[in-house]
Length: 244
Ligand SMILES: Nc1ncnc2c1ncn2[C@@H]1O[C@H](COP(=O)(O)OP(=O)(O)OP(=O)(O)O)[C@@H](O)[C@H]1O
Image (cartoon, rainbow, N blue to C red; front, top):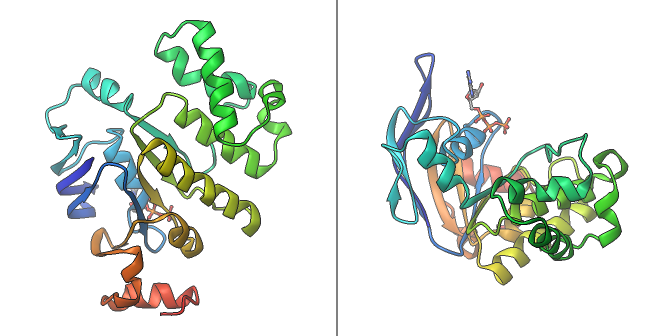
């Protein structure tokens, strides 16, 4: 479970996020949409503890993080996987070592790492032979699968995705959406997905929220998107030619 309590973030005197309150239940997938620059990536960075809020706090599974030390953040980050916008694979490491990265940091024995790497590659739909390849040898969709595998390998209860389908063609994007859904269904992962992609939102979301100018203006269950009331949210959905 992820809870935001009056969460605010300002930088250089400018308010980026203001007083966000939200609970993402265990096993739920929340999609956050919003215009460019509205603060979506900043929100994910706050949840990961990569930056600290100006006011308010984040709770992870009932634990408030406001007074966390760097060490405590490092520990709780073990509960969270992050899939970065550009996949952000380590270019000099092969796929095996990319997926093994978080497992090595946990200090697991190599035999267990090996078993988990191949199991995770299978979960994300990559052949075992992919393990020996370098990121540069992979297509965009396979890179994204690898990035998801790297995040999933540590078996985190929470996964955060920053624009998981950006830059992928619609068919490949759809397979990534399927994968996000499967991970939620099969592993019960709690997820926040930040995206511009309404198709993706419709495929993976239990609920969808609109972030605008640092404010979470409306959050709706996926099945109730036809009842959205905020004008910008309506416009946002219509712009993507959603029949509402
Ligand atoms: N370190 C920083 N210094 C100055 N401004 C920042 C910093 N980090 C974020 N911002 C500003 O905060 C706002 C929100 O940025 P953020 O990257 O969170 O938006 P976003 O919604 O993820 O955008 P996009 O959809 O384009 O990725 C932007 O106006 C950005 O310029």
